[in-house]
Length: 106
Image (cartoon, rainbow, N blue to C red):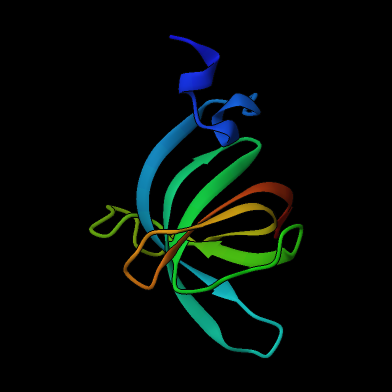
């Protein structure tokens, strides 16, 4: 495979990403929550689908819930601060947001 055939955001990934498809939400500073889906996650970052357009380099608060139908439904969500590195329109009012995890919040 030629490097020109790989999308630019994949060229910079140093860590392996795992596909998830888990429900998530973005907590905005206004107190509003935007529903999202965590498409994939890795040690260094994650990809979300949401009806939200963040600014590049914006730090957003993201909570990733456990998979629906999980055998441990009482497990707390993974809460992170995500630095937005890219945002692409999906064409259905949602956007693919890719970013770097800058901190995992307890």
